[in-house]
Length: 332
Image (tube, rainbow, N blue to C red; front, side, top):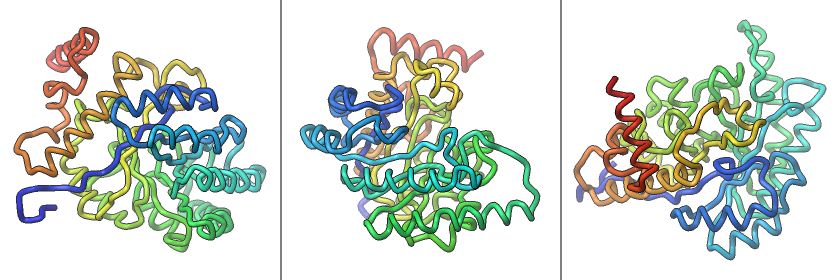
């Protein structure tokens, strides 16, 4: 998208999920994480609600206001949360209503997450069973969507890759399954990691989502830093511009230091020299890339492989060594 002057693209606020550093988030973590994120250039924190009592929304709102930062809320569909299984459905609906209340408390217009079945629960379905599951999902989401809509909040349902769910893997599946509820308290959350696995190509899927896209999460194709990966970020941003998405871009990755989250997200190795470096490099790439696009600057900064050479991993000894090792490995 261009404005006739050679400039391209909307400059969006950037945020980072606290899962980059810790899980579960607690009230005592809020100040330190807000300070780190602000220093790296992020304007908001994405706050996971893993358990209702992990952190205090009023305190979070106060802390973030002190740093001049905003908030976005994400839910977690761990064991015991499932809108398909009748054993867990009512409790899961109550949990999602709680997430909406938290969003109101911290000023988040959205609650994002894979609000279908428990993450990691996968099984084969024929067409008949899929149809029944989709109808069950619609009916389970409807009262929660109404609750959210009445409060001006959107539940942004996230398609996950095939290894994490059997229900909604692609944008097309999400649009079909959620059609009766879209714009009635329900939208879509798109994550570049899952798009990279399931969509051919991701940019077309973003365009298909259109104005139903309410949340965008980003990371490298390996769940590492944004930039320095094989993602075609120019194509990604072009698609976001074409649908006029002006919301924030939030970096979602995970720490391997927590056993539970490392297993759930399949984080078996370090994805950057440190979690701080993962966040800092992502903020640098997103800021610089959006600046270049807005100014109409030439160059191939949108090609993932060029970003390490452009300094996406910084210039300190550890980061330079990490980048050199990656480059040598790729050339073998």
